[in-house]
Length: 95
Image (cartoon, rainbow, N blue to C red; front, side, top):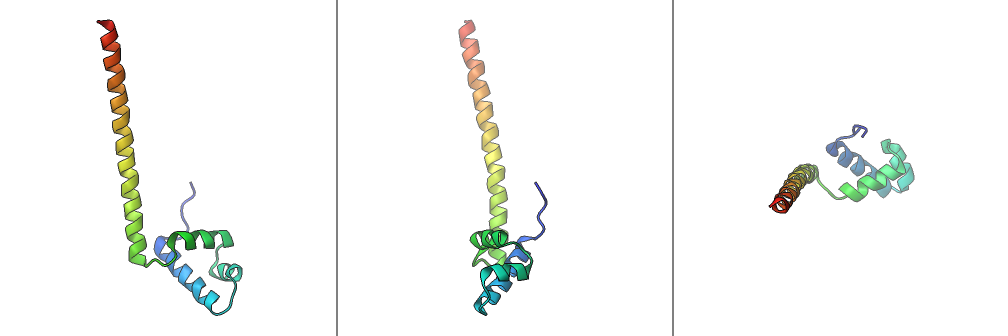
């Protein structure tokens, strides 16, 4: 995966800049070009971060990382459980 060009804080600042331009009568396509991103990126950012403050976005990213970490832990535990079940099944067949 390609490293991000913009941090969450910069994304929110860019979105605010675009919203100001749009409120001044510029269309979204031109505003996205003005802030230096594609139209698709602008809409994706607006969907993900629209209306957020910087501190809220930081908190969201922290929670997303924690969620991913916990999902990995659960997956590892599920794998351990499967291995134990298969081991017990094999041992019971040998008796």
